[in-house]
Image 1: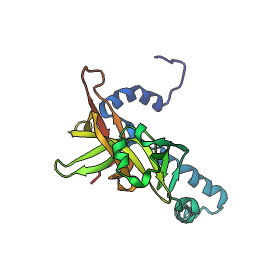
Image 2: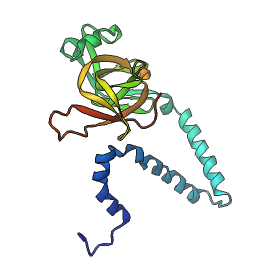
Image 3: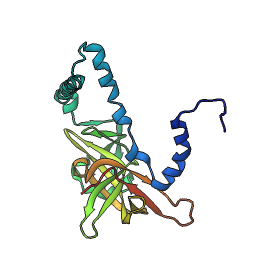
Image 4: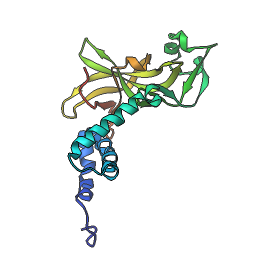
Amino acid sequence: MVFPDERLKPKHHFLVHYPRYIRKTGPLVNKWTLRFEGKHRFFKRIPSVVPNFKNVGKTFSYRHSLAQFYHWRSSSALKTTQCGPGRMEYVVHIDGSSAVAEVPDLVVDGAVFAVNWAENCGTMYKPDMFVVYRHNVDDGLHEFGRICKIFPRRSDCPYFLLQTYETKGFDDHFCAYVIDENSTGWKVVPADSLLDHHPVSVWAPNRSKQGAAELLVALRYFVL
C-alpha cells in the first residue's frame, strides 16, 4: 500500500489503469463525460428557485426547453463566426504559398491576414489541429490535414491552410485511421466544406520503434 493511512476512493484506483488503457486504445475522448456533468449545475439550481416538487421531471424539461430557446434566439448564438487576433503575412513567406495563391479572394497586395484561432458555429479551431477534409471514393478512406494557418473572411466562414497526409488504411484494433507521418501536400479549404466539423485526435502508437512513421486518427463517431 502506497498510502496505508488514507481512505482512497475508487477513482484513485482507476488512475492506476489509465496509462495502460490509453496505450492500448488511444485518447479517452470517446469516454469523456465532462460536458454531460456540466449540465448538472443547471438542473441543481431549479429546485432552489422553484418551490414546487410535484412532477420535478416535467419542470426540469420545461425550464431546459426555455433556456435552449433563449440561447438560440440570442445574438451570441446567431453570430456563427468569431476570430482571434492576427497579422498580415506575405504569401511568399508562407509554407504552402502555392495553395494560398489559388484562392485570390484571400490575398491582398501579395499578403494575407492570418489569425491565431477561429470559432465557427460553436467549434474552436487552432493551428496544429487535425481535421477530416474529404472522403476518397476510390479507396473508401477519409483524408486528413493539419491546420497550419487560419484565414478569416468577412461575414463568412474561415479558410484553413491544411498540410495533407496520406491515409494508409483503418486499424480495427484501435478503431482509428492510419496515416503517414510525412505530409503529401497543401490545400486551402473553407470550414463549412470539412467532412466533419470536429477536430480529431492524433497520436503515434509506435513512437518507440525505430523508423516508425505512422499516426493514428480516432474519430468521435462514424462519419459518412
